[in-house]
Image (cartoon, rainbow, N blue to C red; front, top):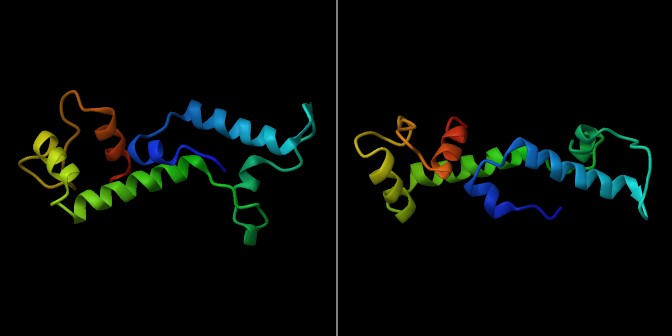
Length: 119
């Protein structure tokens, strides 16, 4: 699966975009030279692990949140990183990353990170 992994670890992708990508992937698997065929399995079933009867495709919504959570973990455990220091100076200078508020006029990146911070 060619997916926008770099963007997914920085931004929470809109549900409409993820739905469109899932549609393209589904069309790739269920089309034959431009002729659409019947979908034999639901996309959710294809995204399950192969040990559970699926094909192991990634659920992009969960994958996106996991990559954002990984960034949150790096910010939390490595305060010496430039990104950690930059975000601390801008958004949570008087508190910790865990208790940082959304703040006024936050960037899209900051909003995205806060959606996965609980993980």
